[in-house]
Image (cartoon, rainbow, N blue to C red; front, side, top):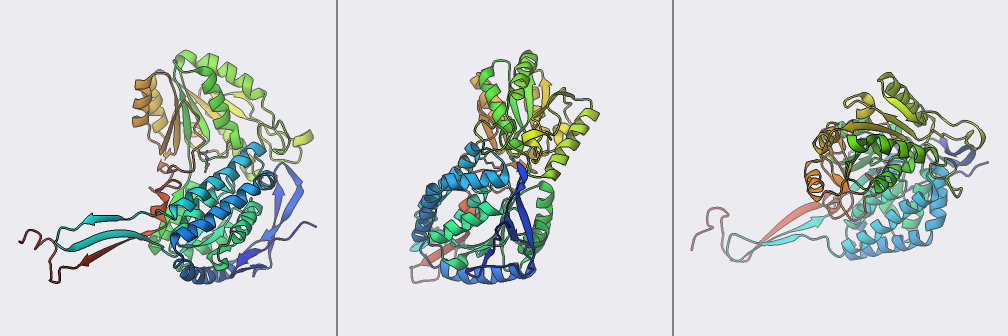
Length: 497
Ligand code: UN1
C-alpha cells in the first residue's frame, strides 16, 4: 500500500472533498509507486481561497523584513534537506541527481534573495512640482495569488513564484503539477516549519482542468502565475483577461544554439549536449535547434553523434546516468509523433529516434537522445515545441542567416551563440529576439537573481526571478503630502510665485 498524502487547507492537512486520489509513480520504473495524492475539486479550492483570504489579512500587516526572515529560514531548511529532496524529486520526476540538486539549489538561492528583498522593496521619493509638497511611491501587497506550476522544475519554479509573492505580503494557493506532487508537499512542509502562518499557504493537489481551472476562475484570486504550455496559457489568459486579473505566463520555447565557423568547437559540443539532452529536453529553455555554419557543419555533426551515442540513459538515482526518462507515456508518444513528422518532412535521422523498452528501461518512459540534420527552416520539426530529447540541425551560410533562422519562430525564450568574434557576439546580443541570450554557453542555466522570461509567444511580458518579479506581486501606491497649508493646483499653479 503506498502512502496517502493530503492537501493543506485552512491550516491543516486534510482529505479532498472528492475523496478521490491519483497515483504518483516513478517515470523510470512505473512499478515503483510513490504515493496517492488528492484529486481535488471546486469545493477544496473554495475552502483554500477563503482561508488564504484570512491569511492575507494577517500576513500583509507583518513588516516585510520579518516576512523576509521566514524566507531565510525556508532557505536554511531546504539547504539542510537538499540531498533528501533531490532524491525524492528524481524518484518522481526522473532527471539525474546532479540536476535535482541544482533544482533545490535554485530554490535555496531564491529564498535567500527573497529574504534580503524584504529589507528593500524599494519605492521612489521624487520632487513634487509644487512647493511644500512631498511625492512618493511604495509597494503594497495585492491579495491571494494562484500558483500553478509544471513538472520539470518541481522546486525551483514554485519558489520563483511563491517566495516573491510572500515577501510582498500576499497569500498563496499552490497547485503543483500532478506529476510532481511529492516535492510540492515537502516544500509546503518546509515553509510551515520555517514559521509561515498556516493560512498564508494552501496546497491543493489535483488536475489542471479541475483544481487549476477553479483557482484561475475564482473571483477572490486577483493574481495568477502559470508556467506550462502556450496552449493552456492561452486558456488561462482568456479567463484572466475577462476577469481583469494580473497574470504572469511563462510558456513554450524553441531555443537555438548557434555555432559559427570560428567557435571553440569542443566548448560548443559540451554546450549542446547539456542544453539539448539535460532534463531529457524537458526544459522551456532546452536547446531544440542547432544552427551550424557551413564550414564546421559536417565535422561538428560527426563528433556530436559520437558523443550522443555514448550517453547513458537510466534511473537518475544511479551513478553514471546522463539522461533520465520522459515524464509520462503521453510525453513519449508526442516525441515519437515528432520523429515521424521529421521523417515525413525529409529531415535526416542521424541519432536515436526510438523508445527503449528492454532490460533496465522496460518499465520507464525512456526515449533515445535524437538528432535530425537537414531540417528545413519553417518545417514543423523546426518550428514546434516538442519538450523532449530531439535536436533539429539547420545549416546556414553566415551569422546573419543564423540570426534570421533563430528569430523566425513564434517563441522567444533563450538563445545561445558560440563565436570568438566579439563584434558578432555583440551584434547577436542585439539582434536575437529572445528574453535571454548566452554567449559561449548553452541555452539553459539561467540564474535565480536575474529576470527570467521570453518574448513573443513565450510569455506575456512579465519576468520571474531577479528584481522584476517583485513588481508583478505588488501594487504601486503613490502618496502626495501637501504641507503648504493652502490649495495648490497641480499643472496650474506650478510656476506661480
Ligand atoms: C524552465 O525550463 O521552465 O535556465 C526553467 C534554466 C533553469 C530554469 C528552467 N534555471 O534552464
